[in-house]
Amino acid sequence: MGKYPQAKKVAGPARRLPNRPNFHLYTEDVRILLGIDTGDAFPPAIPMILNLKFPDAELDLVHVIESVLPDGSFPQVGESHPLALMYKEKERVALAALDLAASKFAEAKIPARTLVKHGDAPLKLIQHADQEGCDLIVARTTSKGYFGSLFFGSVAKGLLNGAHQSLLIVKGEIPADKKLKVVFASDHSPYCDACVDLLAEMAPQGIEHLIVLTVNELSDEVAKLMTEGIEDRKNLGANWVEEQLEARNQAICEKLVPLNARFESRIVEGHTNKAIRKVMDETGADLLIMGAQGHGFFARLTLGSKSFHQVVSEPHSVLVLRPEFGS
Image (tube, rainbow, N blue to C red; front, side, top):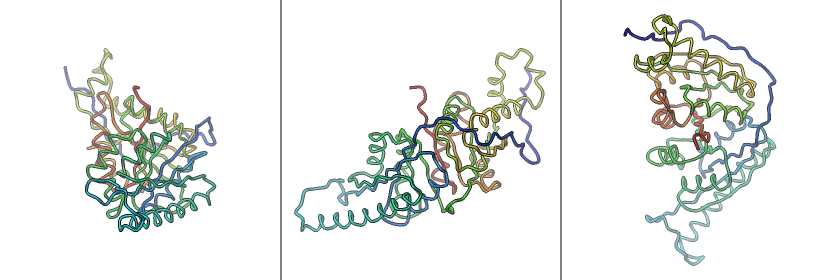
């Protein structure tokens, strides 16, 4: 057998897809958990949440006071004990930060509960999200402070691999009331299809421009799998793979019409992480959306280690979707 067709690199401007404005469907409330620190890490996460404009969103604002002892314990001591005084001060500062965050959401008429918990920060956040039925955990990464340690290293891997909820990781700062430009990275796996359905259900209304990106780094072996069952594979044409990926991108845009965004499809060649970084830079996108993992023969194209890389190594904000899949 000869070689199977490889996708041709697209030159020139990306093709734009038809838009269907003002499309609406029934969506459930989105319950969001935002981790609040006592420094300057959390405030930039607030504009991102507000700019996404999730319909009927509800917020849980949670600060976790961690033990200062090596064993992570909170021993019972008298009120005048130095440990008790220190934790009391930590709680006072935490409540002030929670009140500040709640006031920002109150201005946008979004209800927010405030809670203080004690223990291991990522574990407590995940437990709260599980117990309260949260759909999305939000935090901002920084090179210093609470969330700097929370989302890098082993704790980051634990959240990405252990949390059942989608994760919105905010990096840098974004202006308030900005209409967002977003890249949705797709590998067209069944898991990714479930991510598309989840995003359509969440239906954020603050995305003005959504770019559906597929990175084509298919090998001859994978191309063979794509054409399995097709009798006349030799006559498919040089652009067959590209045409198939383009059709799948358009299908995603059709599913995402509840977002009321302007859609664009891009198919690029190269290594996935490098290609995503290039498109994010070229388009000036505010946010990358991708699934937490891939499945099937497309799994190697994105996610798993790719989503972890995008969270901890790239400068852009990332929404990692975790649909209920295969359960």
